Structures are given as C-alpha cells and as structure tokens.
Amino acid sequence: MPIVPHAARLESDMIVANVWEPLAGVKPVDRGVDRGVGVPRSRWTKEVTRSPSIGYGGNTMSDHFRPADSPLDALVPAIQVSDLTVAYDDTPVLWDIDLDVPEGVIMGIIGPNGAGKSTLIKAILGIVPIAAGSVRVFGSPFRRNRKRVGYIPQRTSVDWDFPTTVFDVVLMGCYGRLGWIRRPSRRDRDAAMEAIETVGMSEYASRQIGELSGGQQQRTFLARALMQQSDIYLMDEPFQGVDALTEKAIVLLLRDLKHHGKTVVVVHHDLQTVEHYFDRIAMLNVRKIADGPSREVFTEENLKRTYGGQLTPVQTAS
Amino acid sequence: MKALESLVQTLIDIVMWFVNLLPPVLSDPFQYAFMQRALLTSLVVGVICGVLSCYIVLKRWALLGDAVSHAVLPGVAIAYLLGLPFSVGAFISGALTSLGIGALERNTRIKSDSAMGLMFTGAFALGVVIISRIASSTHLMHILFGNVLGVRMEALTWTVLAGAVTLFFAFRYYKEFLLFSFDPTHASAIGMNTAAIHYGLMLLLTLTIVASLETVGIVLVVAMLIIPGSTANMLVNSLPRMIAISVAVGAVSSALGLYLSFLLNVASGGTIVLVTFAFFVPALVFGPNGLLFRRRRITVAPA
Image 1 (cartoon, rainbow over the protein chains, first blue to last red):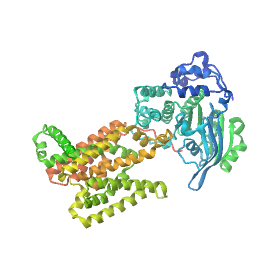
Image 2 (cartoon, chains in turn blue, yellow):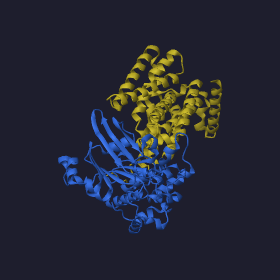
Image 3 (cartoon, rainbow over the protein chains, first blue to last red):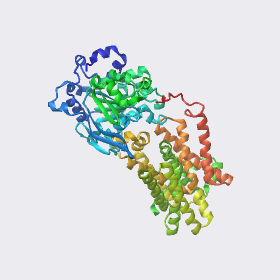
Image 4 (cartoon, chains in turn red, brown):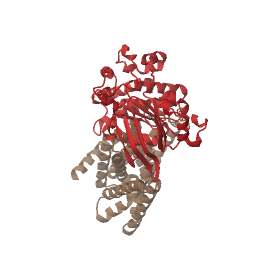
C-alpha cells in the first residue's frame, strides 16, 4: 500500500499543515520519511504509554523512527478479536468473528445496516456483553489496555444540547487517567488546549458543542481521543452528515494519526470511498465475510456476499 | 444531635443577620422562631434541589425523581409507627424502591418507564393505606404537600444533615457525574464504574427528596427537581454555570415563596413551586437558549 509522503501532503494541504503544528517535534528531514505499513511502531507507542508527560508530540518523537527491539513486536496485532459472538436477547448480532487489526493501519469496517458494525466497536470497548470469544488489545485483555483505546462516538448518539463546551469535552479525555480521586490539573488543561489546537479548533474551544458544524463536532471528539493519548482510535461513522470538505479534512487527520504509528478503525457506510480511505477493510454481516488489504478484499464477489441482493447504487451513498 | 442542633441554630442566626439587613416589610415575618426555621429549611432545600436538578434534567431522570418522591411515603408511615425520624424511614424506602426500579430494568423485559410506574404507585399506595390506619388526614396532607411552617428543630437538623451530605458528594464526584450524564459510553469505556455512579446519583436523589419533604412535600418536590435546572438550561451553556444559576433560582424562590405564602396566607409548598415556575417562564421566553433567541443550531442530518 503506497503512502503519500508526509512532507508532500503538508505542502499540498493547508489544513494539515496548520493542524499538526504541535506535533512539530519531528525534524523537517524526518518528515519526508515514508515508512510503509510494515515498519514496526510498537517501540514508539510503548514509550509514549509509559511516559508520564502529557501530550503526544515533543521529544519522544525521535523514538518513532527507531527500529523495534524485537521483530516479534510487529506481529502482535493492535486488536485481536477471536471467536467473538455477541447476542441481544436471543438474536445473534455478531457471530464467531475472527479479526486482527495490525498496528499502524487505517481499517474500515463495512457492511449493511444491522450488520453489527457498531456492536463490534462496542464489544472491543467492553461496553456490550460478549456471549463468547475474546478481544485482546496489544496482546492483553482490553481491561488492562483500555487507556490506549480512544472511542469517537456516532454523532447521533451524543446529546448535542448538553450544556458543555468543546474544551470541557476534550478535558474528559483525561478522566480515565485521573481515576476517582484526582481532578484535572493545570497541566491537563494545557494538554486539552493542545489537543484542541491539534485538530484546528482553537477558536471554538469555548463554544457549546451544539453550535458546531458536523465536522467540528467530529474533530472535538477526535481531540478527546488525542487527549487520552490513545494508540488506537475507534470511530463510529465519522463521515455521517458532514460535508465533502470536512470529510477530506478528517481523512487527512486520520492519515496523519497513522503516520504517527496510531491504529484507526472506522465504521464506514460509503462504499465509493472505501478503497481511497482505508489500507485494510473488514466486511461484516453478522459473520465476517472478508478482511484484508482493501485492494484484495474489496471485490464485487465479496460485496455481493456482504450485502446480499440489497446492494443498489443508491444505497452506496447512504 | 444536641451539638448539631446548636450548629443549626448558629446557621439560623447567620441567615437572620442577613435577613435583618432587609427593609422591615420583608424581614418582619421572620421575627417568629417558626418562620426562621422555615426559612433555613427552605434555603437548604432550594440549594440542594438546585444542584441535583441539573443532573436530573440532563440525565432525563425527571420521572425517576417523581417515582422516588412518591416511594418514600410508606417509609414515612413506618418510621412514624416505630417512633423513628421521618427522614430515616423515607430514605430507606426511597432507596429500596430506586434500587428495585434499577433491578427490574436490568433483569427483566420491563422497560424503565413501566418499572418506575409499577414500583412507585405500589409503594405510594402502601403508604396511603398505612397512614389512613394510623394518622389523621391532616397528617397525610402535611406529608403530601409539605408543612414548612411546622418544621421542628429536630426535622430541620436532619434536613441540614442530608443537605450537607448531598452537597459534599455532588461536588466531590462532579467529574464522574458530568461524564456519566453526558457520555455514559465513554465513562464505561475508560473504566469508570458506571453502576456505582448510577446508584450513587440515585441515592443522592433520594436524600434530596427526603430533605425536601417538609418544605414542599412528596407531590411537589419533583417540581423543585426539574424547574431550577430547566431554567438554568435556558440561560447558560456550561454545567458549572448551570449549577450556580439553578442553585440561585432554587434558593431565591424558596425564600420568596415562603414569604409570599405567609403574607397571603396560602399553602407554602405550592407557593414556592409557583414562584420557581415564575422564574422559569421568562427564562424560557427570553433566555439565550429560549424560544425567542434560540441560537442557530446545525442539526444532525438524518442517517
């Protein structure tokens, strides 16, 4: 899977150049490095997790280009779903799913309505009860690695009338780290501002979340996940109801996350953009139909098996 | 208990110091000891209802508030039988009912609205039956609609105690309650014990209702749990400000309602609720989030 060199994209798109300013700990020379998908990144991500410092840029960035200590590191998938079955009452929503998400990819999950796409995300997060099977995050049960996973909810599931500002929402990203006793400190507040800046939302920090456009709302929650210092980003339909320009901006943000060694999993609806957006896809309809590199898996044959007879050109745009 | 009562007396003295700064027209009724106790009770209730009201409104627990408030009745009756303070009995039966509602919801196919309806009408009916056997209908009226002018020192002390506990937890666990109200999915994803927060908030709700019984009574307490928060929600866009305004609305309308009920010789509970409502209406119409000036909002496109 070829990747557009980072520096080239920075020049070609003003949004990204502006957006990733705080991550500029990397020397300009390094920026052009095209590492490809296969280069292990675990070394760096582990560094960040262990580091007590707030934020995700700065001096740890140089580690990012160091080779991994052990070649085995690269083999541990970011997310490993085995034999997963989820049922609501007696109806199976997901049936015997096996799925590996390698570290450092953008993976799309596609499938018809009711295929269990959102449920899969929620099962990974441990929010819905699992009937059988297991989910491992970086080789350990989710419970032990939950701080490394950020979740960006579906826009329709958020109460946008809630009296809370962009800043407040982003600050919630540190609650998991704080636990029951501590409250957000000065440093946490600074880190929240930094995350807001990273997604290019500084001027909207004190806006109530209902007063934002769809893309801004999406970026707010993305900033919250950044605030969590996550290594994995789970997004439930981030492009729903956003205009084309915002969609492009979000995609560029995701690619940049990937360039920093992060893993992104996106529940997606629009089949026309699948090949363009994702390195890998998983096709889902209660059972897993296929998964793998987009070019190999995104075939007419597999689409037919995933969507059955219900696939029409109209539906691809829903 | 004696030490607490003297503490409460000190609180009354402090409040009276401020009241005496007001013109005599306003401060005169509060020269009676029973009016002083009523004033402190009302203020405490206004403040804690103001705080809880924000969570109740945002969490959409209005019906739950109504349910718990009715469910305390059998507890009050049984406490009366056993010679215990009303608040203890009320708290126990309110807490049991709210736990029962939660258990029904989680473990059966009964949905939450029916679960609440079932439990609270059942408990309320039980309470009415017990009270009809042991006390006069005046007693029942006092419990149902409040009797703030007849509050004794002991009951006031319990109210103050319940209020202090509620305030402590509401502020101590502000961040948990905020996240739980706004985004429970995220809360459980980051490992917060959402069940503990859920039941914790329910217990605080019960405690608030118990503290409010003497002032506005079982039937009207839910108004004090919905109106101040809703009023503040029309005016501001952040939770800390919302709580501040909600507390102000609760406290001012409690005191003002008490004063007006004395002046006009009408039921105090009802008057307090009416005054609160009188704050809500202009906020609804003229508030920044109200009907006239509602900020333009980008609505989510249908899926």
